[in-house]
Image 1 (cartoon, rainbow, N blue to C red):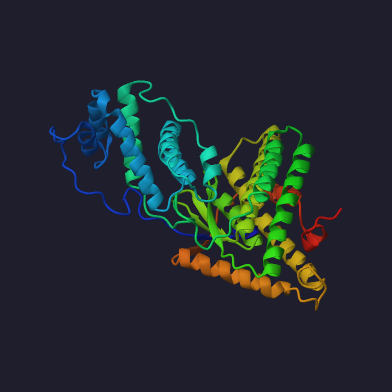
Image 2: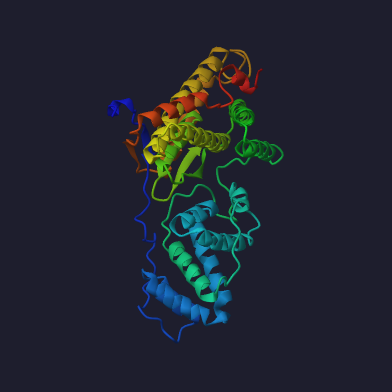
Length: 434
């Protein structure tokens, strides 16, 4: 067994939600037994939502299954629970992710149906919501496979929604005008993001590693150029845009390694990431163009890492070694650690080259263009201030999770092979070079 010093221990910034199972505002007291004079929906809720265990769910499901006239009210109440989630800072993808994690795919579909119906009433949705709504799973038919099973699943979902804790908002609620947020031009950024996402989808679907690498490299180049162009434009025009935030899911298994990879990508793109391990996401704080870069680059590198891990593990099995959890965990930890070093070094090199060439690349030194390092320092300070206001209480810990030397070695090698599609001379001045 190698020494633990063979495996670096990266730091990760975390925050925790309120204790799971408790609402941010405790629900009002309900009687232990339903009042037969109340509407059926209220009787079912009194039995199922304000107590734990399956017995209450079964009682509530029986009441609802016996009265089809309660269906419309049951669905309307569900929309209210979803609306309360928005008020507590949640967004559609957050809700579905947690429901899938805590319950199952069927419950995620039920939640998606409520979300689609509730958000349809708004004339205006916040930024990033449309893509989240488009990615929702299909809602299952109501009252399938039978009324009792359906009602039990709905009540289980409502119990979870009722107890969602309040989390830090990362944008305005639906219907509200965003404050302090400069939206991207409708004629430019959506087309760019659509093109990048299409390239990444093709890279994931192809069975040829060389083609996948070329597609990923092209997508990442487009992403990096767009991000840098936005930063240069903001510097030249003295933009007053403030940092924003987004949440990115960090799903099991091996979520610690994935959170470390996301943290490294965020730091390299002048963002801050804070991981909420209890709720399965990281909140990334930064300027809008940089947030887009973080999300797309993280997704791409995670796809590459997973594919490389699968290939390395196949080689291990061919050599007689059984598939092990420690190999996969060590692989991804090494992959995240090594990529963090590469990304940080690339960012430092590109920044130094741009400064040496005259500041921003927008004009020669002395031309009146703002100097690069002060501009970047001001942006970094703005991001840090915003992150500290959003998360005044965080914990930074050293992570120990790698124990397999073969996994660590293969993961480091995979990180060295990973293509990030944009560093050094190719990005000077925000214009790619060949």
